Length: 370
Image (cartoon, rainbow, N blue to C red; front, side, top):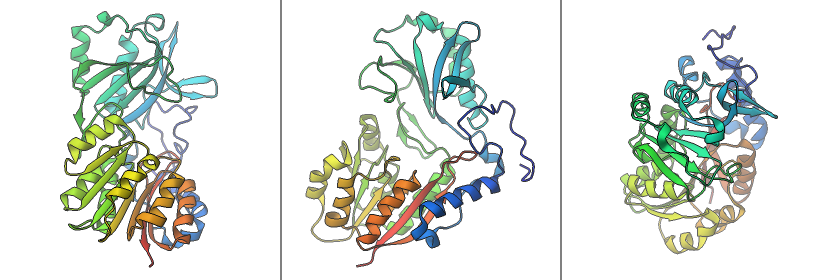
């Protein structure tokens, strides 16, 4: 990509609210993100390391996890995209989406039944698993999904297609019930060999996520005889790392599907299901009286729950802590509490998981000064 003139890939919709850095060069986008991190994390700006990013070619066609709204229009048919105020902006050929995702979107637009017969609200794809979320209790007539369509779907690389009936879908995409596997397999494996399902969270660029895992492992050094609590553990990528080193491991995750997959991916780890704040009694009982304690956390954008932060500081008291954050604002809030309690920030490593957007993730590495 030329750093002075940005030629957008074909199909990049200028009105789409998704890629706010679409017209910036890689250098300009990186500079904006680093400036934001320096301002949001001012007390620890000296610990910021250079941005970990990808080559120019890898800044497009990378996204394999998407959530798109759906709208039926009498003339155009099905439209899949993102809302901008009260208008749905269709993005069937989004340049940050991986080609297999674009293939499935075009396939859906061409083959789905009309809106009155098929109340589609959202399309969600996570790797090789895709879900059609319908705003209804009733199961639509499956006759539209014939053998010829199934053959086309198999050629796209998709492994599983689900129907999820959720009449209240909106802020919460998924419900516990109403799932039907329309075609394929209920689970897939990602590039790291991890089992995942249709609701799994996945980092967008596996090469960068590998770097995160390597950096966290090198800092924490979770060896035999040490205990590591892994909160918001997802499908168990980190749990697998810690158990392979022989550490004693406890994971906590809210989603039932993620807990099930984590059990398959890291069978030697103890895993609790629920909100981390609600599992503090079990974490307290699991905590050893002696020996090295370590902590790895990867919370949502809201950051650590207050109860979890208090438990980590006053009770669990890890000697080393790795914190992967998708929000510099809540990371700064939590670092303020941790440093006030006697922790030193050794490094803040930014990762450009979402090229051409304003989003950036940061791995914070902390050590107990006591």
